[in-house]
Image 1: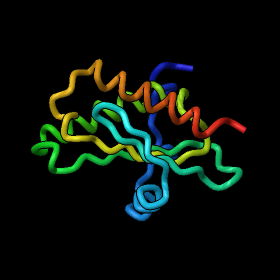
Image 2: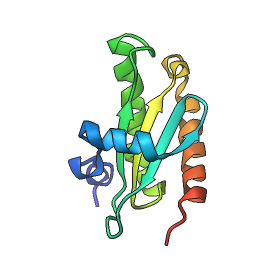
Image 3: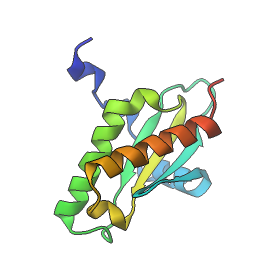
Image 4: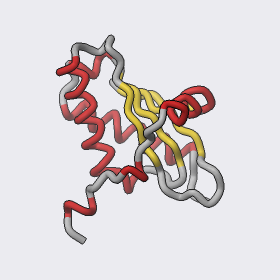
Length: 124
């Protein structure tokens, strides 16, 4: 498999509608890391693909800063999606500290979230 396809982020792997985000935000389990907060909710039985969405508030910074933070989170999700538990809906919310965080901080935060999600949502 080519690296371009392996790291693809197809529409089926994303949360795209507002109501999908709201369901996860209202009923999901919170997992906190340095500059990222993750909310996770188990999908219905038989739905094995993990879907991911990103939220970056205007409190984080202007549009340039928010888009940079979103790109960083998306890159981590694309390249490390295989480490996440299967069958979840995830929403990653950037905290204010994400605006000035180094790449290594994002990597550590994503790793901590991944480990905690694997602990809370074991594979069946």
